[in-house]
Length: 105
Image (cartoon, rainbow, N blue to C red; front, side, top):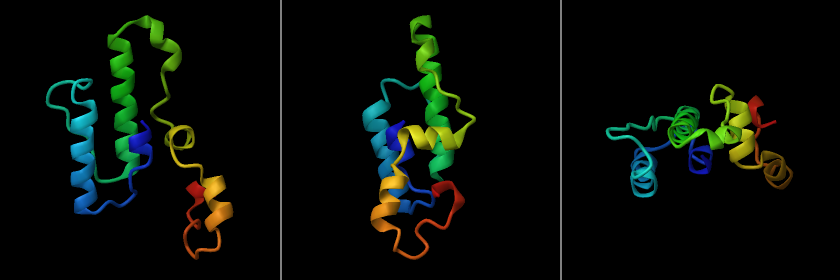
């Protein structure tokens, strides 16, 4: 989840390839066969990772019910697993355009 939350909103081809490699290297044994992570942006990847995580927990027994996340709430997932934008904003807020998007303020 953290890997997905720290992914890029608009990744380059190189970043997409790197994330595909990381997903295969780190999580291949946890995911179903023929999985295809959506790598075009962070939101899609984070929601997909959440759904995969919940499916894995569901498959491995009911003792994990308290660990489920609401995959439809992207802002909550990003807040829980992603970068702490409040800390970054205080350190980098002077960089023009960095925090103009509403999701980061």
